[in-house]
Length: 234
Length: 234
Image (cartoon, rainbow over all chains, first blue to last red; front, side, top):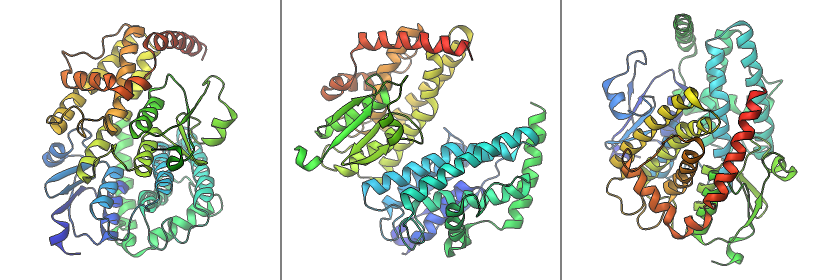
């Protein structure tokens, strides 16, 4: 696919954000060239505030001057705008509904826990780790039930919507383990999730889009200190 | 459309829930016959717990034995399964993204405020009313910017996705005003929202699906008392 057919595509993002990596992996899977504009979240750019005045969050996709916000909505936009293979979502409405259900479950139940674990310690952190683990078990059993007979990925041989949503956060969970010293996800408790998302992280374009692990750990440690320090002064 | 083409369609719902009315209006717009199974939320049925073990919430759509949960996901399923006119979502990916953006904003920012206002009073309620009004203003300005030149509805002459999402809750907001005695939405502060959603509530199939106002007020008063009483004992 050439630039002529895909038009001007820009991501306003943050290299360390798993939500932004979702968009990068999706575009790479489709073979769409894009320009990446990296934000400094401690000093949000006038461009970001102008493009996403409602949520003031990354990622934002700019396509031929049109602005699309919210990562799950951007993924649907990408799939509908470039419907050529590989499709992120399958054609069958019921399969699409299942994938969207688990993506929403993931974003509504697990992301918040991850953030809390990131900026807490001791008892408060342990409590949230227990919540996260319970939800990981729900995911493990639910996904095994709905996609237990999948090939490598839910859509077949290539990662699709649900891997693009969950894979980058799985990578982040492993960083979070390192930074918070809490054991969160492993092949014993959630073997299905673990092997499925490990395979995603090893997949060509996903590996290309995921941040460098050492760089991300250093970033996470610094950001954690900063957030914990500022929460003390609130 | 006959039963032969649409198959067996059931809604597990609650007549008073705006989330369930969404599904009824969508099916009525498409001309799909359905059976309605009314839940008692203070005593959830084994059927509901079996069909939606993750969230244990209505609405659930049953279509030829397949289970779909979460109202926004059900609406997408309905539109994809019966793509004949009237379409809930337009074909253009950017318009779809805008409609999804505002539906998500509505569900994530306004539903929680509505619930809080419903079960609080005095200062606590006033604080949440201020939050709700601020978000209604964001909606008013955002929708006017994105859909200011729409005909009756975003898709044209017939209600579509965004009206189906927001219209039933707008009806509920008016009940909430009655029950909580807080002024929430009117034609002076949010004229665009007010006239647009009033038109929805007057539209044939929407009017058919919306609960009887007096019956809903009585239900809401009783439920409010019960929830406020039980929150005192927590």
